[in-house]
Amino acid sequence: MSTAFLTDRYELTMLAASLADGTAHRPSVFELFSRRLSGGRRFGVVAGTGRLMTLLREFHFGDDELRYLRDNGIVDADALRYLEKYRFTGSIRGYREGELYFPGSPILTVEGTFADAVVLETLALSVLNHDSAVATAASRMSIAAGERPLAEMGSRRAAERSAVAAARAAYIAGFSATSNLEAGREWGIPTMGTAAHSWTLLHDSEEDAFRAQVASLGTDTTLLVDTYDIGVGVETAVRVAGTELGGVRIDSGDLPIVAAEVRAQLDELGALNTRITVTSDLDEYAIAALAASPVDSYGVGTSVVTGSGYPTASMVYKLVARQGADGGWVSVAKASSDKASTGGRKAAFRSLEDGVAVAETVAVSDGFEAVDVPSEHPGSRPLQVTFVEAGEIDTAHEGVTGTAAARAHHLRVREELPVRALALSKSDPAIPTVFVDAVA
Image 1 (cartoon, rainbow, N blue to C red):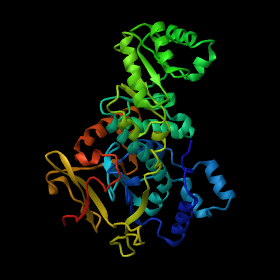
Image 2 (spheres, rainbow, N blue to C red):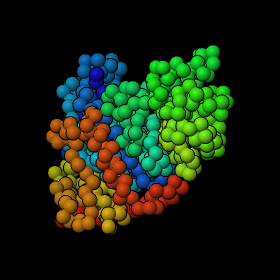
Image 3 (tube, rainbow, N blue to C red):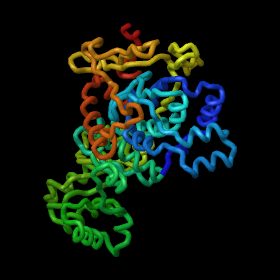
């Protein structure tokens, strides 16, 4: 299935016009970045790159796509001939998936001809804006949860494919499981889930429902105890499953108070090892408020799949360098008020002191060949890797393996954050982005 139509029309009309005026084949550098962090957050999390690589492999124009373009007069015959043979033949470098980013970070750099690269704008932005928004929210929730596990259970609050992507992004950013089976199959994410309130309501009594669930799933299952009266539900759960009951789930009420009452009741009944899971419209603030409560795990739905109020990372895709008519390289940048960009090809480094991040250093080159290397930034960690070289995609970033690697990378680099970055309140970015001239 082609992914080429997951795009905006103006990319193809620009391509057609550039073919007509001879600029289509000018070598160009596009950059995907965010001018600011959404919602006054202190860091962002890159997610979606692995998905983007898989989608890029299927970015071609088949007979159906070409017929639609022709029948609707969207591009001319020359452009149709070009698109018939289109495959991305350029190179893509950028931040590893799971990496932290800040305002101005060159998250993705796409190099090729203008025609090669311009048509990827919408696809790259739609994937990274969605997935990075979810991952950023998920990481904040993971930090708030500490050592307690988090499960993603928001599929019913998102479009069907967005739900799968959101589960993956949440897993990369620290969640430990998902309720979405397709996410489990595609990305190797552990899946979880037992029963909803409808299961209890189906039976003639709560006890009948609990007995049937235990008979099916064993005593280590988690019983949902708040369909009717929570206290009665807990007593029934322990009576049915015994003191080795795996867990109970609470989905309503004043959670800090209810969790304390349930823990006391479980202990009194002898179910000392029975775990308490809470759900009920949690976000990072509600999770943080439960830090002192006797809760063992969390289930998060709506908030995580919608970026906890910020469903996009507000990333943009801009031309930052191109070859001029004379063959020389030109640094270009948008100068609009509040929407300015920084031109030039870039290399990015995380400046560290005693293992703690202190700055995002971005070296800017007006030319094309001169790009800083790590030896020119001692005490810093290089942030960019190669995803595509001359059209060849590095498969290491895709699939189950790529997802697991992204998760491990995120949990590792999150340890570099300064303490102030862990706060949930709105503030400036945790570290500044410093632009410097590349070494000549």
